[in-house]
Length: 195
Image (cartoon, rainbow, N blue to C red; front, side, top):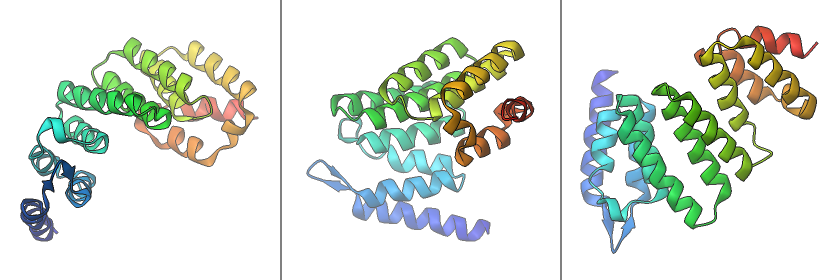
């Protein structure tokens, strides 16, 4: 397995040197190769590949993937900067859905750094851009759970499920909250609220 991953990494590097980008257009194949590296846990290689592209020629998608890889490497400050750049680009393009996703990514970085108030603020802003999205609620649940404030968490879930009964039954939302380590203990409260 390690050997095949090494050969994939070498192939991605070789392809990136051939594909690269021309006339300001970044090869989607380069970005896709970096995403595969990140998803396979090869974050050093993913960041090395993406860092070949000069910052002023990076797409919002590239910034986002670079942010994910940097956070996985433990470089939270760099990850935050990358996600902020993706956010700026999406806001300039008036792409509220993508901007809301970027804010959720920023919230994850803030949670990783223990900046729970900043994470909450990012989730609030994401929710204002995409009111029907459930992911900002996941961030808020994570913040409340990380604070250890069971009363506030229970109250939040009660209000959420009163206002958004559909969300309480959404399988993706439930699977995320019930299986993510950030939500240890939340599944029990969730079950109580669904009775």
